Length: 267
Image (cartoon, rainbow, N blue to C red; front, side, top):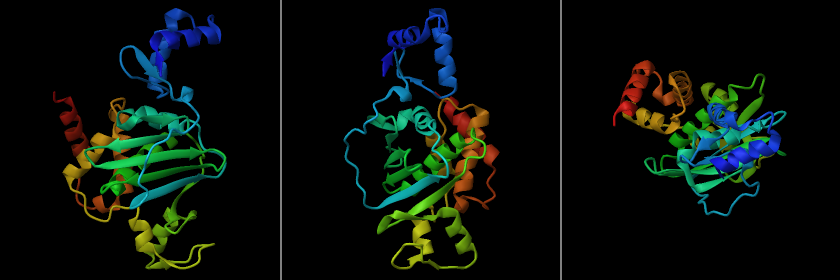
């Protein structure tokens, strides 16, 4: 966290000729546009890349959680966590964010989440607790997919850790394919027994039907104030596509977005 004066001092120390003082407000606005920082108030700014490296201490209940791990073939994009911090800053719990992670809390849904990047292991892991954990996981997945859009040829897999062997995981897409082909069980490589596919998928996928109002509530959580109509539509589409149980109900996504923006304009 920096005051705006400290932000200007940092630019001056970096290179006063390249970053003259009269351009500092413009530089700040560009950084905000590209989700590299956000204004805490009219006097302070938070730049995620300047946060402490060490993870702070906090308590988190690890029973009855939804866990999803992103595993990247070559590297974890270094901008994923910083941009998540910027995009979801109003949901960060008690300023619990650091260089490689953040803790989120959404009171309306009654959920908490921890997102951690491990650059050496080339992974990002999401853990969500609370009754609506699967709903909120869909929101976080939509955020990550939205950020991924800026990277061409980014290769990664979404994996569901085994409940009793969390170091092992099964590809989410593979489980979806097996289920669509009528398979009910899987014996993952390295595991000691079979698992029900429905139970593994049920730990992260919403299995009940969403109503339109529930979807609108999720949009209020997923879409940040910085999103314009184009990026908001992208995020909404990601949430929509990530939950198959909402599809096939004759829902007009454009009409829902119009309702969402109309509600956001109300005082």
